[in-house]
Every structure is written in C-alpha cells, then in structure tokens.
Length: 279
Ligand code: ATR
Image (cartoon, rainbow, N blue to C red):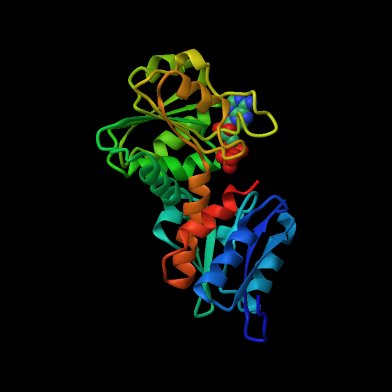
C-alpha cells in the first residue's frame, strides 16, 4: 500500500473491534478500485464516541462503519439520516459529504441481496418467521416487511420486544408477535425462517434457537450467524431437506453497499468474499 500525504482515512468504530475482518476487506477494496484511502479499526468506549466522531469529522474521514455497541448512539452525532436508517433506527455506515456526516444502514439491504443471490427466493406472498427482536432483527424485519411478503411473525424470548418490532413494521405488512415457546403453531405455515438471535454462535455452537424437530422440508432456513459457517440450526435444516442460507453473505453485501455509498462505484465482491472466507 502506497500511503502518501493525500491518502484519506476510513474506519470502523466499535467496542471491541479486534475480531473484525473489515480492515482487511476494505483495504483490499481501496487497492483494487485504486482509491487513495486507508481503513483502520478503532476500539472506542461508549463514553468516548462523541470525541471520536468529532475527530473523524475534523480529520476529513471519507466515512466510517459503525458496529456494536454504537449503532444507535451514533445517530445523535450525525447531521443527516438516510430514510432507511431512520426507519430502522440504527446506523452502520457514515459518509462525510461537504463536511456533513450522513448516516445509512446497509444491514437490511445487505441481508436481502445475500438471500436473493444465494437462494433465488421470490418473497412475494410469503410468510416469514423471524427469531429474535434485537438490533440485527430490526434491520432485517424492516427490509423483509417492505419486500412484498404476506406476513411477518416475530418470535422472541422477551415478548414485549417482539411486540415493539411488530408494531414498528406493521405499516408495510401484516405482523404478529409471539413468545419463542409458541413457535410450533406458526412454523408449519412459514416459508422463510430467519434466526437473528445469537444462539448457536461460536463458541456456543451446540445451541439452537428452536427445537430441531419443528423444522420441515418446505422451509428456507436463514441464519445471520457466520461463525460457524454452518450452525446447528442450519445442519438440522439440511438434515430434513430444507433449503439453507448462512450469514457470511450478509457481511459481504452490507460492506459492498457501504463501498457504493463512499465511492459511488460497485464493490469487488469476489475479492471481498475471498477475504471473508479465510479463517
Ligand atoms: P444483535 O444486535 O446481534 O441483534 P441484541 O440486540 O442483543 O443483539 O439481540 C439479541 C437477540 O437474541 C434478542 O432477540 C435476544 O432475546 P431477548 O430480547 O429476549 O433478550 C436473543 N437472545 C439472546 N440470547 C438468548 C437466549 N439465551 N435465549 C433466547 N433468546 C436469546
């Protein structure tokens, strides 16, 4: 990498960030697209977020990504919000344009692009059941609700959070909130089952968000978890003949959409995928 006095900064704000593959992936993107920029990961504690953002603004950052735990707190520090970020209520990508910081959310669209590219699913008229109602669920629920589905069922351990998300997305589709223990009643009518909870994530790879005997062969089972690549839920889904979709594609496409916002050009998906696939 040829760093000079005109190289501009990009970065990731999170806490922690040491596990992130974004620096490798985004620096490779800059190299391929011939953009004089460098991308670094910054571990910023919540109480220091305002100072970090002020610094990025002052130092002419092209933009930055935002991850846990800052995706909601960042909003108050920005000048403008894109409509999707406003609807989701969280930001994962910021662009600095003419001195203004503009917030976007590329998680939902990244998820949808990955799902459609890898499974060819036609969502029109489908019943979707979402497991979980946290931050990731918000982006995915909002995007799916707007994608022409017939019904969105949100199942969560804490039912009040499912109710909140069901109310938030009810302007785009029919929604229903249920407790995780009532999943058996809806799963037989479900065509797409999406896990947004952390159950099954490394190192707890033996966990699964639902009892595996509830799965059936007409389901498309999608898991946002990408470590491990094939979760216990996806293994059980494959075993009953259901179609499966893992979480790594969402990671790729949410970054690709961020690249489009920063540089106004398409991202080199193949090379980005090669970096994500490396252990
Ligand atoms: P993220 O940003 O990754 O979505 P989050 O906002 O903390 O993380 O949300 C985590 C989700 O996983 C929530 O839906 C949570 O359920 P609660 O709202 O009841 O907390 C769910 N989750 C996490 N651990 C769980 C467990 N052991 N059993 C059931 N659900 C769990």
